[in-house]
Length: 437
Image (cartoon, rainbow, N blue to C red):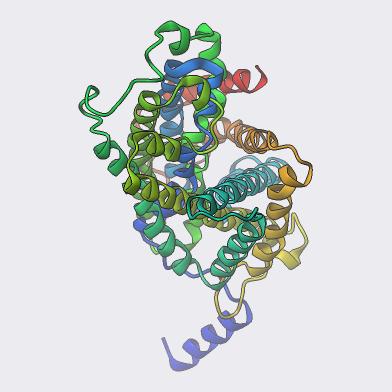
């Protein structure tokens, strides 16, 4: 290539800047697990109120199977269509513009609502921290929650590499706090530290509402994994999407299943089921019951980091979906701009932040703390609506581009048999029943 060609390409990039390809499997893991790991610290325990202790465990494992299948489907398609927008881009190429527009809106709403829930929990944690430090004044934590969201938005504005590198550090630390809590209470020896407070009543708290309660628990069993499919949003910014997306996503699912099982076991062993079903921060409360001062501080920091990591990833994913829709002119093209220096969808990032903050402040502005569960339900329902298109989309993808017709970075096993489609369809149907119950 001549010097003139290089200069021409540089000038073209300056005129039309694009997203930078800088991400590795480590960053994909940080994005997927970072968004979801907060579900181990809050939200999942509402499944206990719906279906009891064992109902929550069944929901965690069955929904885990559902999400493993979703991640495998997502990995195959994304490895061949590495574009910002993830499932939106998939729908655009395989189904059509109307489906793509709907999927893009579902994605944006799901991540924005999740970000709002994170800000709400962050405000509760800051209040708890002030109490632990012996503050005698009634300090409103919400300005600090808003400030945290603004700082994370600034980090996303400045570049995706730094954003997800920070996410890797704080997500890894948050996951390690779950392991440390298990070790600290000697989880392998139930007679030592664990009181089995939530499991002592047998059927009265294990399956208090029978199998109907288990189905109802699926709604919040999703909270262990909701958002892991967001790894597809970063495909266009991967150095090698066919390698990074499958490795990062699969490693993320293994991490989350381990964390979900440990979380359920420790919390069910330390907390009464009536309390656990309504707790805001169950892991932190379990550490307080365990009585260890160091564990309490560690789990408080872990919960804070998990919340920040989730909000950070949500800003990344929601902005990519919004940006991709604007770039294709489904939304005003103004939102599809890329920063000439930082190579980020800066206008999409800035536009969505006040929307998330507004929903985060609704519970306190309306004086209705129970709105947190409603916000979580909005996020879950948006995810379910997006999942509805994944099976027909994958079937059509395989018909348009059969195995061998194009290069795939990952191939879903046991297909075109009924396994993958059946798991997703059945899991989504049962979860929808749970949401309505």
